[in-house]
Image (cartoon, rainbow, N blue to C red; front, side, top):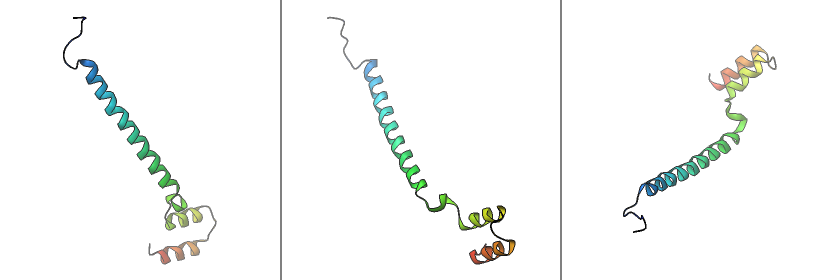
Length: 76
């Protein structure tokens, strides 16, 4: 009567897929935001002391002797 069918129908399946997609999107956005905030709060932008020494040597801020001393001190 009135064209109503018994059972869930395709719309119920679509609703379930939308529900899973929605919560997956929320979880993905939360994880991404959290990992970015952790990365940005890392001291020095994630560079190791040796990376900093290499960059400073390449830019001419320190001499070869200073660079070698830093490498020796860091055990690299």
